[in-house]
Image 1 (spheres, rainbow, N blue to C red):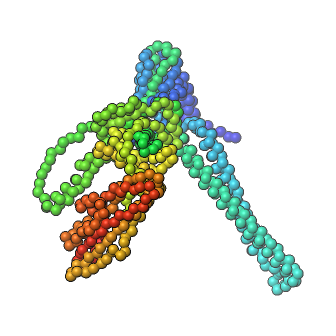
Image 2: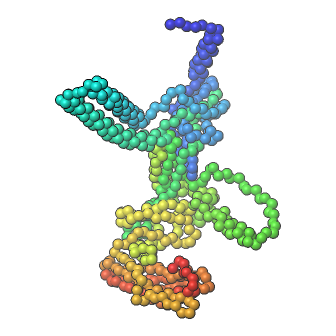
Image 3: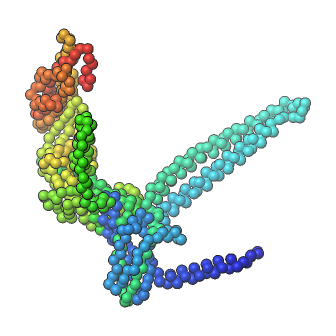
Length: 538
């Protein structure tokens, strides 16, 4: 082996020696800290992480390295709290790629399995190429006998037999390879999907936080606290509504569904959640000059309509905007501020960095309820169980999906929205003991022509069936059409005891049903309109 020496190579080698020597000297003053996450404060779309580390220090200057920090770290949010006798000189962040992070065992196993499948697929591709080469070689040499020289019948039969047998073998071999490829590709798809699920948020802890400190005295156990904000975190509220029976109050459980892919697993940490969003600035808006002018009335009308429909003018939001101080106090562990609701999660929390939904309980309360039954037969033949409860401050301020459980059995889902009313109507599910049917009474329906107007008469019959062993009262809602044109006239002819709201065309009955009773109610209405026109929406 020949080495080529030059002055430039010598200079580069010396520079490298000096760099390594300098790194070695620096390493003598560097301490790698093993830190632990002790608390997490979660906001709408980010979280504040608090770590703790202890290290023995002697007087002098050191570089303390907090390693394996999330790649979704917000650099400007880093805070370091040092013990007495230690001065923090600087704080910085860097990416460290010189060593590969220790991967979880399941990641390594999946990577190995995926590589084995890839190797097997490559082997099958090589087998297919080999079979194709043999087939091409056989077909390129299919000429039998020489030019002008015939072949005996028995020899021809032997040659054709060889061709037939070999072509059949090639076909079977290709079928086997194709079948094996399909099976392996299916396995690879499953492994890739599993790998992506495991890999989400678990690899990439390559950030380091470097803290330059000056130590003024010996400290056997110097405690450092590190705080920083990370992205890749979110939470949303949800509820469990548990109903025991119609005589008991309803239990509400407010939960937080937490998703995080920071790369850092939160194991046994104290946790707080807030409805605030730190990304939204808290600066007071400036009041600009208000200019007025004249414009076309139609344009003004359109602008006014747009402003009326805007969420800023109407005060509509998603339940997480600025919240007023609640009049009623909350239970322990909940803090109401002028801008947010804050929750202390009971006990220690465990949330893995897997981009999956993890639930923690935030509050548990009961509300007295008035139970009832309701039906809208025009839209559904089911009768629904309802409950009216006094509105709760938490429900008013935090909207979310609610899972309903009746006597311990899952009965479906509903949505709780912030409301300004004093009461909240909940639909708890369908009561299979009750049914309702809506039909047009054929012999009571007609179309007629009077002069230039056409008239249509409709009669609707509603049939309620109670198969329960007790009496039940059902609120039934139906409707007749409402005219939006002076040329169209709608008349309610009969309503069978229903209350009628002319503005909406709604009919409401409170129907009492005895055990095992079937009851019918009817209503009729007439629509009159010009005969030369077509009636829409009816």
